Length: 287
Ligand SMILES: [Zn+2]
Image (cartoon, rainbow, N blue to C red; front, side, top):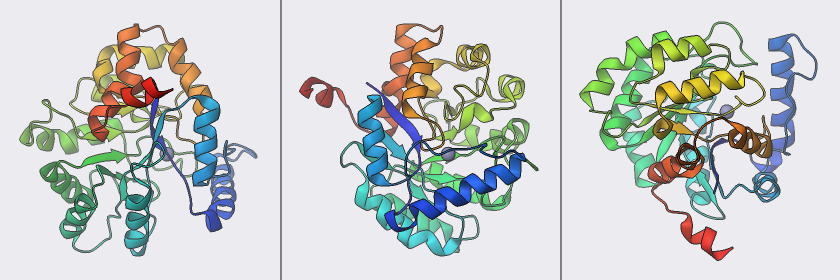
């Protein structure tokens, strides 16, 4: 049973252009041609095909809003696809949106379980007051928040979400909302694919989830395993970052890690089921 907690899709009419654009931004950012290649065509059906091919039972879509004006379209679409065909979606939010608290209440009312924030694409540092206000209200509502964290191939400098900066900015909020009982913040990419030591030093042990998106084949396997050991498998989420990394490759990467079968169970789906509020054993039995 595999639930992929970090995937992206684009509307059918825009998918091709969006993929080409993001590949070009990555090439420019990294100074390397062909630095990032999509593994699907970026559409909803492309993701469904990938799940079938790779044996992934469910996928969570994380919409990245690059403009405040996208709020309604993004969140209505998220609500429309959420919970059908093994697809779940978080909502989208932008730090420049007005009335963020009202908007988060609306996302909650749509039945979405969380939101995605992307400090690099939204040009907003993780410790910015605007993000802190959004996260505070999410924690109040019990909404989850996934932050992109660390290096992004499209925007290598500056890094808008660094492990040490996250820690000092969010520590008091984590304590205030007693997050050690039930974490609601998810940092993607194990806190940053190029900064494993900083994750070990500043993030491991905090009451937050870390996802595995875009880590397999990018980070050293021993660093991935060490972060899991230090942080605890009950706070690690299986994730690919599809289409930017292949779901099958990520699955094989997790299977190959030198950790216990119980830890793999937690990471591959049990932690995700808690977040999404679903139990997938029914689908498994129906196979
Ligand atoms: Zn991503």
